[in-house]
Length: 419
Image 1 (cartoon, rainbow, N blue to C red):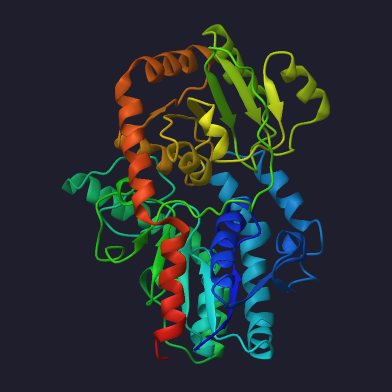
Image 2 (spheres, helix red, strand yellow; image 1 turned 120 degrees about the horizontal axis):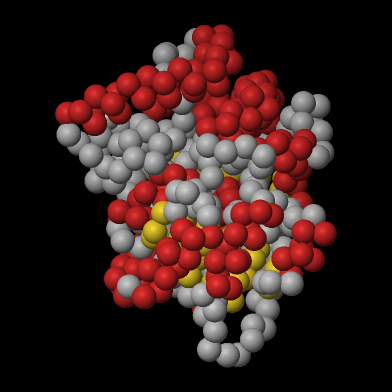
């Protein structure tokens, strides 16, 4: 029985929170769980042993500076900031420091985020088994899938397949900047060349788990046909944020969130609130502690404003979500059957919005102005099809297993697989 495992994921709340949910589940089954990461995220793991690495390259406060720069970018520029300021340096840290830590801690098994390709390389070098968790949108580099940084719909016509092929060349060119360091260490360790998705992402041969359900995915391919689409990884009591007492009246509440990186966008929040108010709706803003106090006071004149609220529970009282379409907030809304106004800002958010639109539970607003937001809100509240499709996803989430399913499969792999 292998019972000392480590979890490793990017130092962002959208990855940390679902990963912690799985970790708690395994801990409750008697598994010894350790987290490895930067000093900036140590306070998230009071219940577990935490082992910091990269203390010299990433001193405390480094990630906040990086995410502040990301918050001022849109589209692929967000990803380029993360790649240049974090990913390349983190790969170096992982290859230099992680092997010694894993051996010193006698780690038997690794649970790593799909974006942790350096961790997967080290695991293969040390012959430590690992599973992959897709905490963000599951990335599938297959010719029939639009590249993950686009907002294209699924289309397998010859013309589109050729376009996909061309854009995957661009994707590989961009991602190769991340893999230069990994290639250096792969050669140093005498390991075979890594091809396909394995070159760019943590791609486990044992099991891969996604927070999406199968409906929130394009038709499966040979790459992801055996992946576990579990729905959101959540644990009651893990997050201690509050649920406010909202006014007990007939006004429809609209939840507005731009996630834990983009929550400083005051002008965008204001447009959303004004659209709600013009329609007689109540806007509830969550800004993740990123808005300046002066801006908060301005918004409080026209909306209810909070730094954090407990998700998904808040959706019991909110009928619609307006969101950048980060995966976690979208899933929380859908777990209560709430339709979504998607206003994607960067990286994979356009792709998530497209997948939700495809299954009928979201409207994507591309040109962000009050007029278009009002039109989308009116449509989503008056057309019962959006609620109906969102309720179907709610039921699918319930039946997909969530944290329990992921924990059970990983536990059985740890306990029963011979390595």
